[in-house]
Image (cartoon, rainbow over the protein chains, first blue to last red):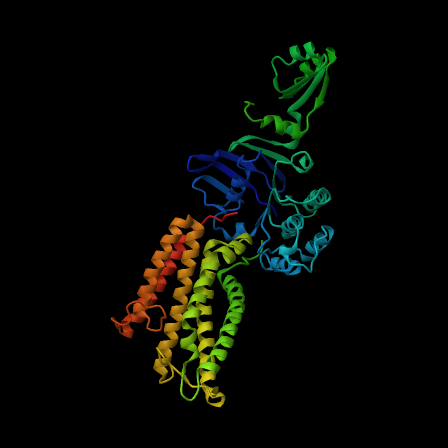
Length: 292
Length: 235
């Protein structure tokens, strides 16, 4: 089971600071959604509202057809995994995992134990004795094994080393095959997890910058490389988001689609047309101090 | 999805079982301290107050601290597990009533047992501020008063914890000031209290004191529900 999400005109102001401004989007169920944005863009604020940690004052949030705030069914089906402090968490790992059976109806204890073993989390220790990375891995384990229709990971990988993160990403894909659910994945480490996302929502300065499927988004960016003069004339009418030159050769990143005719012209001019990574698009679309 | 797991009754059971464990530790420590003190302080020529009188102040403070911790520890934990604020409130209300009864029963029964063995142990124990052994009605009155007193202290602590969590230190301090006022009011109506500012000058009859105490409890519950019903979970 997976929850669809519909957000309309969500606005959050903290005194004079505009955390979210008229945010509207729809997230389809059963997909992995990348919620991307720079530090302070409003990602965590948005996710805390989706998890009903706040009451919406301006705008609406509808999850699986209902207002999620104080909604027993929706809250029981929503896991919000974020960076937590383990200083005062004195329970043993085995007890923590077993305890989840009381809260999440689809929690798979055997899978959780298996995952904990893969992450090298010592079951006989208490949570406060775990390292930062191990505690993050424990939270991720709980999030995956809970199998809630809506699972939110807010930069949940913090402190996890590269092999652990790789394992986490692999498990997301495997779990999504076995038990599809709506997964929201907030991050600014786009490069290493862009292959996970079915859809991407980019938040910038509290506003939705764009929302596309990963495929659509990747089709919207091109790199064009060739002699400087040819590149300049070819891209005159295009939206260039980044450019660099070396000797007489110039390489530019273009946001937008190329028509068939433009593609033919590029080939005639001998220009090399390539694709952009999601990371490149993200960096240049959210670049500070520049209009995109 | 299956039926709702974190219902108010389930919440009350989880909270009560956990807090009862804490309470047993607390009462055990107090019991040991009492035994040690009574062994030294009472004899043929001197008497010492009974356990119920001895523990009344500290057990109320214990409930008060438990109430403060309810928000920062239990509420925060269970909200992450997907409970609604309303169910948590109802569960906490139920468990705090049960805990107030449990702590009072434990104290009174222990008090009776200690009275019983005092002759054998050579202790001279007397009831001091309130007497619950002379008649059944006196017992019921003291028992009811102690349950309500423990509950009121828990609710006051819960209110302070909620106010600090919800609105920060300024309103938190204001809630402490309000609490002193509530404790003063409770002191007028509940004779068993250890913190009374007016007991010596005002004597309120039982048929007024009991209903007013219940109204005070209902008011505190109302305030706490207002504080929790749309509270922001801080991460």
